[in-house]
Length: 132
Image (tube, rainbow, N blue to C red; front, side, top):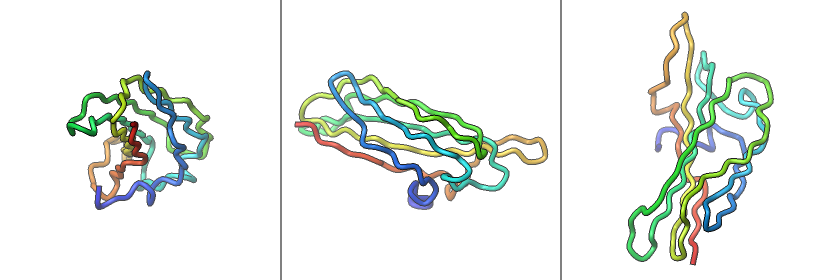
């Protein structure tokens, strides 16, 4: 998203994932949403979407992907560290991409809605690896 960079909204350091022939594992560190993620006014929930995709380097096409999401309350409580596993096949001569997107849910005047303004929809490739 050109209108909202993930690094501008999210100050959580995403460690390099570990990949093997069964998939990838990400050690997401503990974080405090209100202190480490910049969100729009009235935000009550934060959804972190994590997507991995494998591309055949010799014949560019996605041959495998997987995703998950984490929903947390947007407050000053600590979200504990988590080990996230995305089962998938990772072949040799593959480009593995790890992408993260944030979605915010606001509540104003007892009306809950997902934020649809692109300025508040950061998404980026956070890691890319070539397996030979």
